[in-house]
Image (cartoon, rainbow, N blue to C red; front, side, top):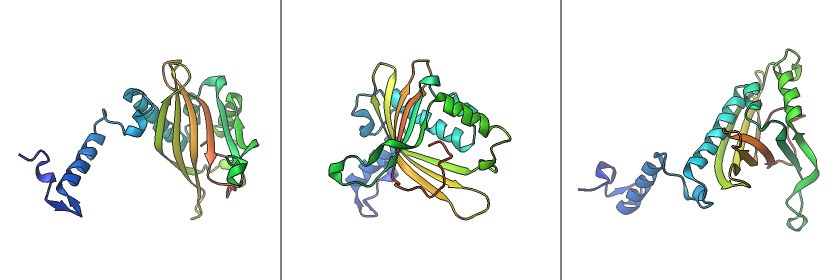
Length: 211
């Protein structure tokens, strides 16, 4: 009996039977929580830890998209948080990575976020009232063991859609995030984040959202 059953016709959209069977098997495995793509397992990270990190990033994106600032603040590592978005500059390859060493779109600590969250949740957030509508898309997540038994180095791609009022105009922001997540208190918390944007110039007066 064919192990693929009715899912293995002789030829389908240019796939021969062996290739199709292999492709469908990969899809089936990807639906199993025990399977993680090889790119995530090459660094000897336990599958459970990889899934915890992905779940953290997904939950964080939901909190920020829903403007649940206070709940998001609870996911950071209190006063130890270090959050930076360096300004990208255009340089030749030999001149370095292409990011400013002293200029930032945002450089924040816990107290900075605490003040910002308090303002967002007050009646005085005139600059973002009505609030922006955002949608965050997180992908290409790679997890590696960090320094210590309870830390993980996590890299992910981020695409943010942002719109305001009734205008058809919108803003797209994309980049690569380098995070350090820590589980020293039990639940995962954000300890450090560096966001490397793909933009040298942002089409907005100020970056008023958390990436």
